[in-house]
Length: 174
Length: 174
DNA sequence: GCGTTTGTTCAAACTTTTTTGAACAAACGA
DNA sequence: TCGTTTGTTCAAAAAAGTTTGAACAAACGC
Image (cartoon, rainbow over all chains, first blue to last red; front, top):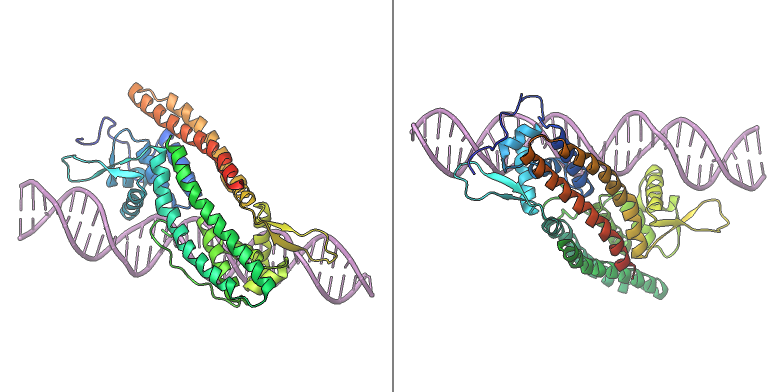
């Protein structure tokens, strides 16, 4: 795609963001959304602007629309790419790269699980096996039984968690 | 971004706490766990100590074991009660109140969804209906169609999210 | 009443996370 | 080659979030 589409000369710049009604509302919604997921506000802002933009946007568009620094925009885009929530638009002749949002829930949820959830489950598994070992070493038999029951319970939790994730993705994927 | 990229720093907590091996490991595990859920570390510490304690504990026990302030312990317990993750032990003759952890996953997940997830979904619904209205007011027909498609998509996401939650609870409840 | 124990509150101190912005590098055309 | 455009990096500043601790209140026994 050539340049910046039909929407045109964007009114006055300056003084932070130049978002108009609907855009502002969408951005706020996504900011809330990513906060719930424990991600920084700039991630929500960037995704929001891309989500409601009729055409792909470049880094500088985000800087201007949101009134954030280039550094923020760059890092935010990197994170969103990592989550699979944003992709670079292929095959535009220009030098600068344009981005568009991934908009299907399956992909978004999948990326979040892959990047934010799985790593914690993995590292948790290691810790749990160390726990089981520690519990076995308790000398008092009554306390040992109690500890082992508790460790076993945690182990069950993570096992069930691991089962739920693929199911979740399947359901959301339709 | 404390959250967006790969693995965690795995910090050991260190303070004037009197936790011994297994307790320490459990507490660290829960600290990591609640961090993933976006809750403060003291919540994880308190729940962890209660979880691995063979007998209920009172506020001052937590203060001593964890080396945290009374204020932290008080606030942490309040939050955990709100989540349904901890309950007061009934019918002990003493003046001080003792606490024990809720240990079934269904209850824990249910509390988290009720306290941390649902409120956001609710407030999101209101925002979405405002969004739909704003989209309808776009004069340009092409842009209007695009905006409406996007708003509709968000609406679908939340609808599906709302469907998944009870399902999740049912699966984890066994 | 008084002193003690138990727990809560909330402003200030502290900690952690996020954002900024200036320096840098790479790609391109002239 | 050089100047311009585009984007990245990272130390430091700012913002956000958490914990502390001293003041306060409530419940109890004496």
